[in-house]
Length: 301
Image (cartoon, rainbow, N blue to C red; front, side, top):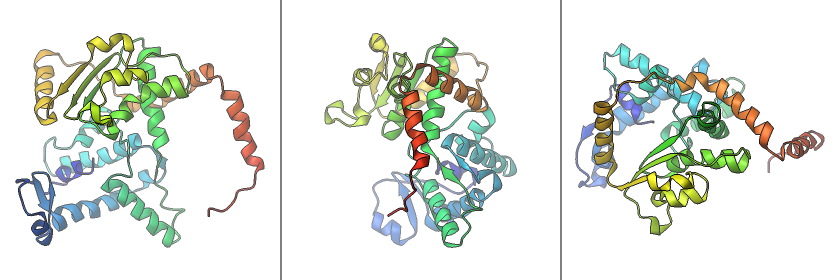
């Protein structure tokens, strides 16, 4: 989501070529993402400078998951869009306007995470940790994303689907919601009902991005009785995704927005209730946690 900020900030990005001398680009202060080129100082560093000023705002000074973090950041990007008369250019701003939760599976693996870490280091060095309190807690995201799936199936008696564009960590983060329900929380469930997987990775290398729906079914991620209805397209995502979006826009009518971000607390409470009702280890784990208070706290070595 870091590179989404460039557009809301109205910083120039240029279409170029991947067939360039990257050492020469570095010498000239140009950064490359495949065939997209932008200035190191005027775009990359300027984005960082603006981001850091945003991260020290009062609404960010708490522990939160990326769901809440991106909602706050999306509100700021929406303000930039309006102030600069840019139109709708930011994904985060659009998600904010429509109450859509956005998650990042590996928040530390990004320039946003790097800047959060830098500010935390500064606060520690300056004795300001009591003022700068931003902490990104991935456990909140695991529970928040899982709560969406559980609510859709258990409480609203509907069906769920995953559309996996590409792969890597986000792919498993989306799919692991079902093992979290079944394996960890011990709530009876069977897996996602539908799976559309667009990838260019091969399954025989054993990597996550190439893992097919059948492998996911062995984990409980996909309902094994629905495997014949899953779709895997070995296709470049920049070809597939525009076609999918165009098809949906032309063949479906607008639907009432779910605005799931604003139902976060409700869904969290439902998840907690189902967990306590179904998990066989709750009492044992509670007792073990209580014993922690009797043990001395050692200093970090």
